[in-house]
Length: 68
Image 1: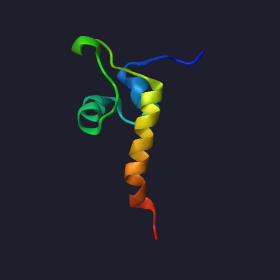
Image 2: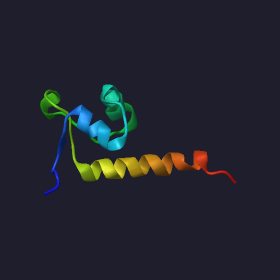
Image 3: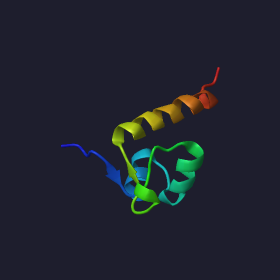
Image 4: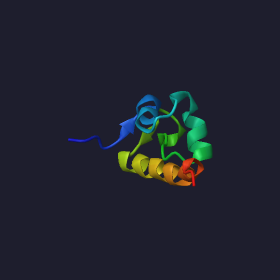
């Protein structure tokens, strides 16, 4: 069975190729779809939300690397 929810900055950031030390900034400034319950405890994220977020990041930045 696949995971329903990823828990912890390390697992979430590993899933999207980011540094766990930057999770607060990623959530606040880049829209990473992760949360804490009642602003405490571990970070949590749904895998399908992370997939959507990483695709949005790709689509937003891919034109920077397409050479004409």
